[in-house]
Length: 129
Image 1 (cartoon, helix red, strand yellow):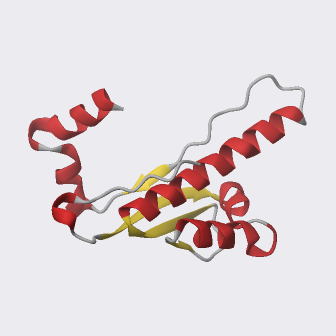
Image 2 (cartoon, helix red, strand yellow; image 1 turned 120 degrees about the vertical axis):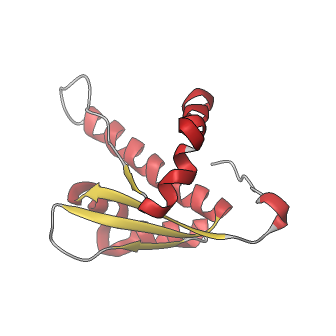
């Protein structure tokens, strides 16, 4: 994994939080046996990774830290899911696996800044990525 340092505007040391809504199976993959996978992700990324308690079908994974640590933690989660898909495909006769969908939980107070005036910001993000 490439080590990317992201400098926030004005050089501020900003701590951000992102929340992901995931199914239990996906959460289990991130936690790993005896919590080893999530422990490794915490150590290597430098981000705080918290997983909501409970036996409900969906749980919230919260990633907190400076932007670069969040990017690193998020990338580690994505690579873990990619690894799981590759492993399950090699162990099964199925030719394709349905994609893993991660849902970002965004507070209503933040939605406006993501959408932008007249939808300009979200349109720009769709075109860029």
